[in-house]
Image (tube, rainbow, N blue to C red; front, side, top):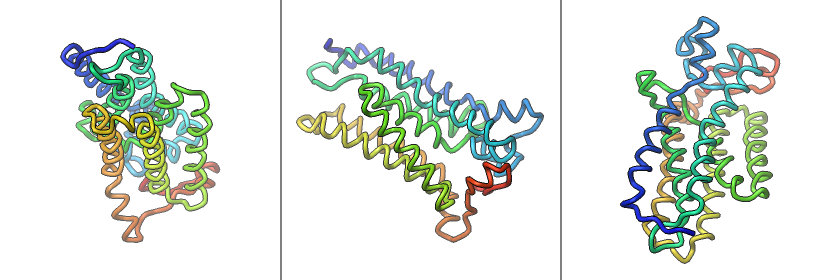
Length: 245
């Protein structure tokens, strides 16, 4: 492993932040709706995300939207992993790639939720966040892949059985972050006071905060008993599900 000082690396992190934010600003839901001569902000819930696209244009197009957002959140993390995996921060055993993966993912999510290209009226970041977590650890070890798939299936089945789309998505994001936080706790249990490790856990916490904050209105409606349900069966049949996902 090669050591790298932050003074020799900070400007690369600045470039990563800018590039990843701009990647996050690319909203496929807007592109799809414009191609169909519609404004995604004026159809369904008005949310430029996969669920709203599914209700308006069908499950297949919604699935493509979802997979694009998953890759949008995960691919930048994957790229920075392969670029930085041979480096540790100077004077430590902390892998640079462990931090940069989530750093890049966070800025993609920021760009998705608050895109400058859409007057800061973006989506809610669930697919991007799930994509980030699905790519971050499986790129290290193949045996992490079944765990990631299991997490996706858990979210799908939870939503299918409870019809609480927003809550199922948030539970999935939280479960993924706890899983990955546990892996890093075990990996760096001898270095938990290192500033780099603290920063890594702060990034995981911030990613959670961003997705929960983006769903704050859904949570208010949920606790008030006013949240509409997301019916996977209705979406599959091409019928109208919830308006608020």
